[in-house]
Length: 203
View: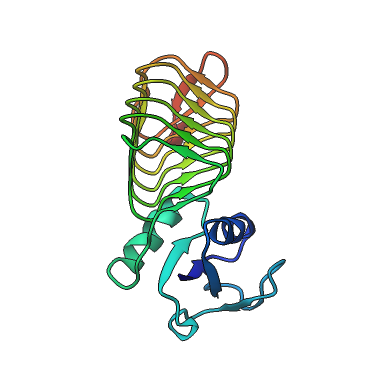
């Protein structure tokens, strides 16, 4: 299948590897702010994607709010399938939504529910009965313990840990290495061990 990759920034380099590893072809890249040659693939970056004659697309934008907005913009215009790296382990009893990227060495265990347009980045763990909201970014090495959850558009930072059953609300940022031991309300930033939550507006 021929994919257009939406976005030509840093995450696009990893997504290019993912598309190829999953057995597909890259038709090119679309970016509103940059055109020319994509590094390191050498493929074209254009501000319009239809000329690329792609059969499917995937969104290479790490920011969760921008990722959501771009997904809404593309809705119904092009197929946005799940991409799973061959090194990942996804339970047959898990559910993964359209447009989600499952990167190298990710584990998604039984009865986990992963929303649409999510990034499950390198080496993260989504344990049994977890729930990941739409348009989230679960960063490299993050751990969601059994029954934990994150709401829509959350960023769970690198090596962050959610303890079993903990719920993080929508539009939250959990800092790298934080350990979340209790539920977190919508729109919070969490830092430290144990994690301390504050409103994003209070920063």
